[in-house]
Length: 323
Image (cartoon, rainbow, N blue to C red; front, side):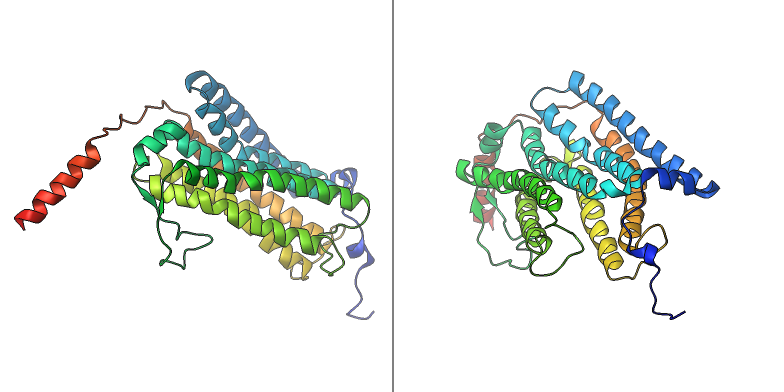
């Protein structure tokens, strides 16, 4: 047989769920059972945490916390469904991606709510300026001017993240509609395919949405240090990197044939499977860590002294005169 001959099973669609169940060996049964248990425990931990937050935290902060905390359990659950039903992978991926798009916006809202809301944020930071030369858009542009904190600036920051939550969901629905008509295929990178146009545009929307969150975090990280905002932001970024970047790298390797075909899985289906199994384990660990960060008593920030800035300026003026 010619060495270049490709096993015809490597060109087939992903297997059905019943085929996976019947072909599992002992190791496969243990692996699938353990990952399914991790996904189920993630959901149970999240439900318990939601009940605690709903009872102990005031609105609207509790709504933002519940949305942000749901990222890891939702991703773990959708990955578990995709692992057992490989032909539903596109739908499970779009579901988790759309949910995380909302989480990006909700994390920005959470930082504002940690300050006491929009009005409290404007009172505390109304005389400050925002450094916009941050990632992922302008980290290489330190010459950009600082922007004053105004009601209009705050609206633009929120709009920059909200557009991703809205448009990502719209493009996911559009992709499913085009898929039913045979026009959308992630592996089809031809100029006539829909994926080559939709996916890069969604990538640009993602970068635009992450920018306002990074700007606000850089400004509030010291103020909200007592609220553990730095490890919370780290967990949010970790979910982003693992669910988006890690999955994208594995899928690209699979489409290039770097990840070998293993019948009944094609190279692409096997890449999705590896990504799903990794994410279930990673999201389970992140769920446990975020529970430690969010399931606690929330003390309000100390009240803002409107004369504090004047006192600081007077102190600097006196020190300057003494010098």
